[in-house]
Image (cartoon, rainbow over the protein chains, first blue to last red):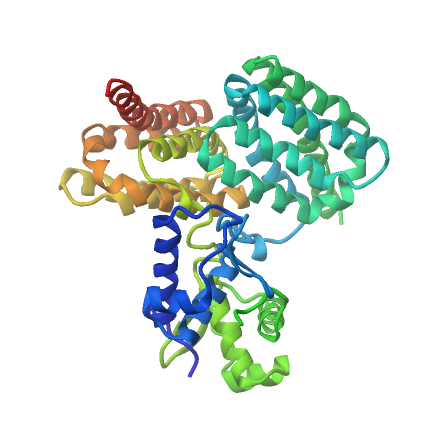
Length: 236
Length: 236
């Protein structure tokens, strides 16, 4: 028989582990007690504990470093495919749907960041922007550096939910934007510089419009692609 | 030793299963071939297949009905805690952060739904709204009915990403809104009726403002709670 959906001993042990991390206020990167201590603390068998750890690794809550131990994951339990895009057909429609979501939230995030950013956050955001621009100018892949810049703005916004949502959106975007990234390379340095400067001079409206300006170029590209595909399809 | 993070036989079998579902274009609710056929198709052992199925059940991609078989899940692979809120402290700050996210996306979703809604979708949305209002009037819990109404608007918007994101947001909201729900009961019928009518008369701006009006009441409630807590804290 294949497994059923009732909560198993493993599920219960996983819940106990989460409670333990919360109670002890363990932060990302901190190590859990070793296997023997945990089996005693949670009063479970070794095999149940291992299954539970495996489950929490799959949920990005824990990470196991071979020969070193089990740690709280830096990914804060954010799943691989939080938006359930596994089964949505890839193409310009998905791309423009994702950009539409970004246009709904990122201008507001930039505005909020401009109101709350601290001096040390300004320094870090500037560094991330410089790093991105260097990648843009040197023809290297800038996708990762771009994600770090946009996610850090969400962190500066002070909104705990958006901080977690942004990495999931940038990850999803990268699934398919890789190929088209070179199309945006030329204008991108200037656009990112504008966003950075507006946030750092504590100008919420300026930051909001700089973000709209940046993302609407991307939106335009995919919306035109989608439109062209429809034209081709209708003329067959 | 605790498990490591390298892709195992189980992970590979799970990927094969996902490819199989995609290739055959199996929809939510459709049944997979039985265990014996699957082990042959994927060329894996029975125990590896079972582990892989267990993993995809945990990822809400498959569901096992005891004595009936394995099916594609209605949850479309959307995870339990997509926003990684397991480790964010519950309270008015999290509540108002979530409402801020809703205020960023739901007015735009309502506007888009008003432009694209079909006659049969209008009928269904009206039914969901009537059901919600009936719950509001009869002092029953309306949290579920409220979620269905808001999620269906996202479906009418035609944006595939928002369709998947909305259920994750309403689920998250319900974790803590349950207690405060009665506070919003009185005005809620009228507010939802306004949203419904604007969408059904294909009035994008009207739908947008009706949604802002509805959500800003919720925002105001939590923002005031957060502010009061700060005052109490500072006066101790």
